[in-house]
Amino acid sequence: MPIETLDGLIEGYKTFRQDHWEKEVKRWKTLRVGQNPKFMIISCSDSRVEPSTIFNGRPGEFFTVRNVANLVPAFENDEGQHGVSAALEFAVTQLEVPNIIVMGHGSCGGVKACYCNAFEGQPTGKGAFIRNWVSQLNPVREKIKSQNHDTEDKALKAMELETVRLSLNNLMSFPFVKARVESGHLKLHGAYFAIEDGVLHMIDDMGAFKPVEYFDK
Image 1 (cartoon, helix red, strand yellow):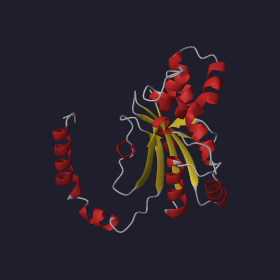
Image 2: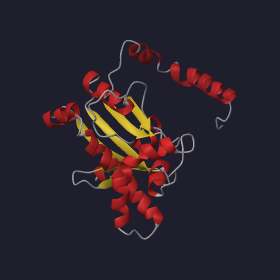
Image 3: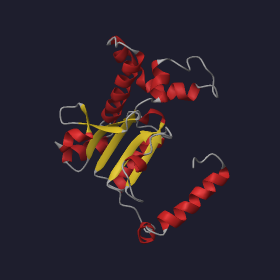
Image 4: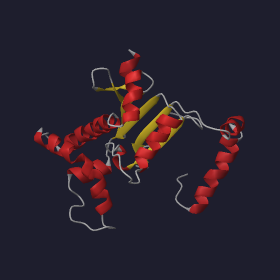
């Protein structure tokens, strides 16, 4: 049953306790003393894109950061409060994760908001925060629009893929990420989940997005 009320949420918790907690109780007790994930996943906040569901993850396997349009801002060495950067620093320097995956997805509202200038001129509470956040994609938007795609849907998909590449490039602007990548202690991966057909795509060695079945051949 879909969870639409607080009571439904509580019922979901009861199911978790009965069906999942009891089966994983030894693992949960082990996790109490610390975590050792092998993957950091940076994905969108979109309710349709849940990394643990898509990758069938168990408790403690993924250190996950979710935000609008799965963005990683470029490195800034200031006194600001940077949520994504703080999570990234913790995952890389404290947990020493060996893999980071940036996962975009189809029908991304954040990407579309940038592409369409959806909140241009709007004040706080009417879209200003969204506009300012996705403005990181403005150069990507101009690149995509210059390519003259046949339809808006094709342009949006192309922009969703480029958004993943932008975040991967921005990851390398962080000195502690760059150092670990170059030393071979950290690998960066790009992924894209197509909501319409449930197919996961990964960036291959040539920089192209390929369905995961491609890697099985």
